[in-house]
Image (cartoon, rainbow, N blue to C red; front, side):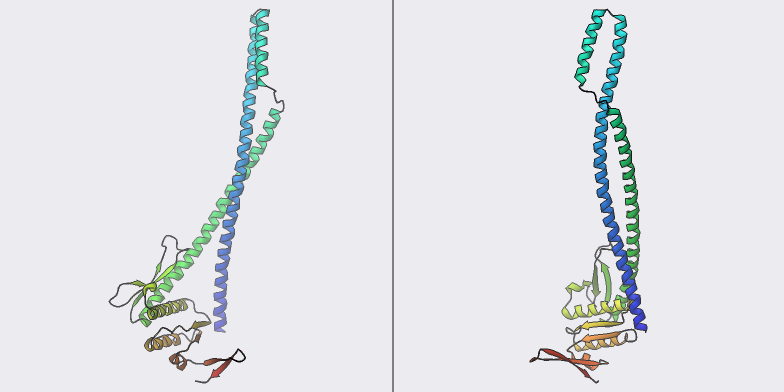
Amino acid sequence: SKYEKEFLQIKEKKNLQEKLEKEEKEEILSIKNIEKDIILEENKLKNIIEKLEKLNGITIQIEKSLEDLVEVEEVLLNTSLKASKETLYNLEIKLKGLGVVNLLAIEEFEELKEKYEFIIAQRDDLVISKKSLLKLVEEIEKVIETKFYSAYKEIDKNFEYMCKEVLNNSIGRLKLTNQDNIIESGIDLMVKFKNKKSQSITLLSGGEKSMVAIAFIMALFMYKPSPFTFFDEIEAALDETNIKKLISKLKEFTDRSQFILITHNKETMRRSDKLYGVTMNKELGESKIISVSI
């Protein structure tokens, strides 16, 4: 039927929105995990660099010792035996000062260098993955923002129309509480009554709040009607004139939806298409539903 198709369309759009929101949360979590991996790999890289610097220092010392030995060879060729012995003795003292020479230093250096290059490659891959995920999140947020803003503008027009219809030609507008971040922004209902300044719904009286809330609900309904809608004593704070106005407005939409109203108001009952009464047996503690012909 028509109502079932509309209900399925609404359900599909809702599932799509939930899917987009779920994907965004998963991508954000994945980015956080990648950032943790990058920090871990950078710490490993730092340790390797420290070892490389230490090995480099040892290599420099060895090279300097070799240079000194070459100088010794030249000196020995040009000095007497006694002077050569003194020079050799001094060089031996210098060599002892160097401590134990690690003969595996070059091999360790090559291994650490290979590991260093591997970690650098891993880090680069993680950085690329992070950029890709951030781009995907940005695209999802743009889709959500576009759809939200499109719906917001349409509902704003509907709200303006409904306020004129049910609130004596008052001017109603929607207002984003955070213009810089539409996705996380709230929405305030603003209404300007005749000879009054524009006010938020929070500053209105009980009856005015009810009528503004009803106007907003109907604005949503105009944008995307549902197969059926429940209202729980929405006219409790309204006078008879506004109740009649509300019922008349609801009847305009009965070709697109069904409205189920819980009420104690006689006027609402009188103008209903179908009426069900609920009574309770106090002795048994059971409720009983009674259909009433109108």
